Length: 106
Image 1 (spheres, rainbow, N blue to C red):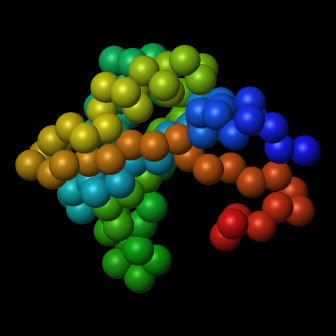
Image 2: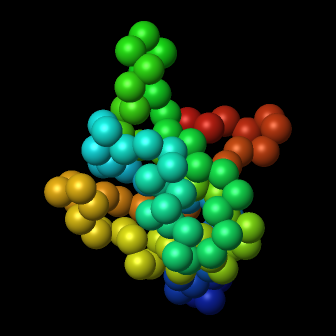
């Protein structure tokens, strides 16, 4: 049942925060090591992975960074979203995760 209280809740209140962030618009020359170095000031980075083209093995310009805690991921998102890195404006958001049986396209 929808109530006025439910309609006024901010969109982010129901969203579960994750310790993994999604970074876009990176330079094609960015390395995993640079990604770790870029985000480690905000907390312990447990994993950084750039998505690469399967044929050329060159980075596609986006990747994922996983932190030890959700708080660190949130700090990194707030500090790095909209920053210029290597002459490019990057965007950072919480990585979307799916549970078994969920459709990732929704």
